[in-house]
Amino acid sequence: MYYIVFGYNMENKITQLRKGILELAILGALSRGRHYGYSLVKTISGSSDIDLTEGTIYPILSRLAKEGLVQSEWVESSQGPPRKYYTLTLKGEETFRILDGEFRKLAAIVDNAQRAALVEVESAYGNVLSVTKETNNG
Amino acid sequence: MANGFSGPVAQIVDNYLERLKKGLKGISAKDQEDLVKEIHSHIYESFRSDPTPDEVTRVLKVLDKLGEPAAVISARMPDAMVTLGKKKKLPFLILAGLLIAFFGVPLGMSGIGLVAGIIIAILGLVLAFYVLAFSMILTGWLAAVILIIRLVVPGFLDPYMDIYPLVPDPTFNLVIYIIGALLISAIGFGLLWVGSRMMRGIRFVFRFLFDKIKNWRKKAPAAATA
Figure 1 (cartoon, rainbow over the protein chains, first blue to last red):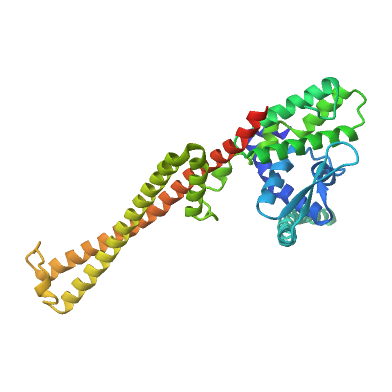
Figure 2 (tube, one colour; figure 1 turned 180 degrees about the horizontal axis):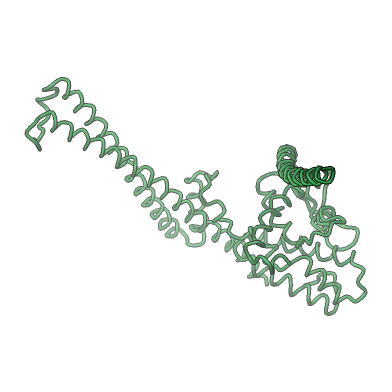
């Protein structure tokens, strides 16, 4: 919906934001166990209502593989075609640890900024209330 | 293609995978096959876990969630361009050697000769360029040092040099020459900088060619059997 309202630029911004965070989410999911593409999508999107274009994880996975952060192997499936399983390399685990810490710090910054704005609004509202109280008393 | 589906569903999946393959022209045959297999597996797993009763509706839903082939491919295509601007791991000469191997074998000895000639010519130009840059820096600095010494010790190295008086005042004349000498060395540094840019460009061209040739080599035997 926001695409229509804000146009292409907003879509672009959202894509950019998602890309980095999606990469982190992939590393996070793999840090808790091995996954093939589809199971990774299911793990990441979970029950959330974020509409993930599932195909976008593949370019990210191939880039991570190129950077030596993940490794993959083909494993025969009991039914259907073989699955390509991904696991984190040692370098990948270390990278995830660092990026995760960094992400939490950044998320805290965004949170703090919002809370600060909220407090400002509340205190302004509080002042109004106390003023009305005083006038009522007087 | 036997893709584990049947009827119209198989056709839809085939069509999708074909479009995917078409978009993968720029990457190596092995990577292409790998990705197509992986996406096929994805479609299969997604299809299996979706409860929609009508199979055609279901497969369309699966492909819609997966996204257009472009989404699956994006950021993967311009392999050579992604590495542009980064320092390359493979030494330049090894790459040149590989180029000779890839080019040379199908074309025979004359091919080797041709490619080796081109590479030597390029290396020669690069070498000449750097020699020029370094000699300009060296000349500039050396001349500047000697001229500065002459400022302090008039007549230094006088038997070996003959300075044309541009202005009547000898000190001012020397200062002009010193600035000139420093300018020459500055041009030398500028050439070095330009050179590093050009090397990047040459590396890019070579890498691009190398990727193309590699893909072509891998594709050729497959085409023969088909």
